[in-house]
Image 1 (cartoon, protein in one colour):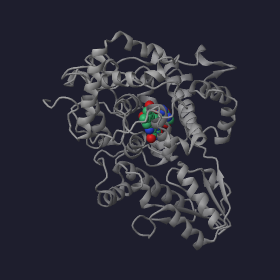
Image 2: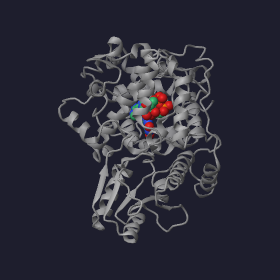
Image 3: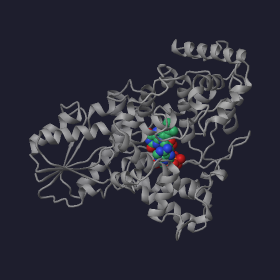
Image 4: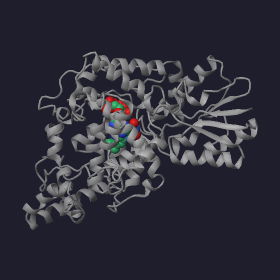
Length: 519
Ligand code: FAD
């Protein structure tokens, strides 16, 4: 074999640059279902199903297009890990070169590098066109900045690509339409929202579901609702459905959440994007065209494009800049274990119960739920960053380390002290009451910080402010928030501290109630 083209589970672009100069007479595609990929990180059944099903669909399409392929099926080969499988493939095929895209995790990249080195086979790594910018282009931008904030990156990316630009100016006269995009759903909720297009499991997916139900029976989550796009055609249809039915309302309600509402106006395209079923540029251009055709406002189009051209690219660049050190960061010295209810949804806190239950059902929660409900609670409770990182990596269908880790360790837990976020995203139960409808049905009161009905978010919020006041009191971005502490009496603050300890103890003991066993 001349080239062994290694196709990883998140490199399923049908026109992947790894296939560019492929010669079927000399080259071979290689794919492998590796048990360790689903067990080394504990993984939601829907996440395992999605990866395996999308890989098998990709393999079938490659074969149909005449690409020779070796595909190792789970349970039919002896390899536990990627390194065992790849080393054996190198011995079997004796390729002159390995070709692949850049892996989605630092560790896997090390593994391939190591296999290539020990097998003395050169490895050519090609740019993954699922990102508009390569890692080195991001690195050059980063080198020229003192502070690598999202907003600077996003403007740079708009200027470089010309997306939503008119000559040198941002379309609409502003870079940012956030003020229009922070509407609360009000006390009545968001009203009727069109259901997203569903992709019921076909024969390939059903076969994978049966395998997962048996081989990964103890893994978290359900397969009952599995209807994710698993092919490029389905991903394109999912995009069209989003453009036609939800994009126009995406902006105003992008920060809202509501009990029982899984998708709101979100695109649910992250998994398809991360697996390579659809390219980021395709999604961005389609949204821009809808704006140009007058179908959606600039606020919705900009708000959405910012997520992909801004956040997604920025996070990807930062991951490769800061790994492997990022995982070890823990500036708050947080060491609480992750509460058991993250795996079961058995808790009396309404917002956490609802969000986690939906996450277990679908392998999905939208951004603000991840940041300001499950992520925020872990931060305020003081959960060990690595423990909450492992949960996020396990539980969402779209979780690949390059995107999950910066969002969790950096944005949500602020464990790095600000490599990415300019301040910790901390809020009390009052914020949750304003942006969602959970508090109406919760036994706890968002305004109360002490007493049997105190909202655990509010208690832990004030406890967090006290604990970390030295660090943030003087900080220009946080001084105002921390100043509120000065208005509280020492006695009240001590009562909050005591209450926070009760919550930590109850959750450590595995209770479903955070504060009050009467609920
Ligand atoms: P939409 O709201 O419709 O947004 C459109 C697209 O923008 C997404 O599909 C995604 O590709 C991109 N995007 C939006 N926000 C981000 C972001 N912060 N970082 C990178 N891309 C973004 N996203 C993942 O893809 N995988 C993860 O494992 C993941 N873990 C997260 C963990 C935490 C703690 C937080 C706060 C966010 C995480 N995100 C992750 C980002 C974001 O929550 C998801 O991309 C989004 O909820 C996916 O749903 P959607 O496709 O309906 O997104």
